[in-house]
Image (cartoon, rainbow, N blue to C red; front, side, top):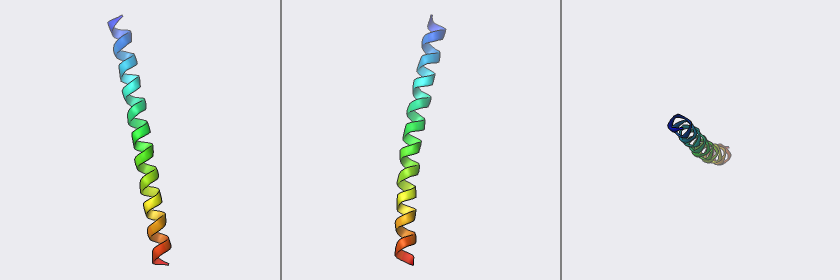
Length: 40
């Protein structure tokens, strides 16, 4: 049982990290687009 619980925790952590990374990536994307528009 402990093994199954630890596997679930690892999965939850991986999902959280993925979500944070996607938000971070989206924010960088918006910043880059804004800079490109300003420089033109």
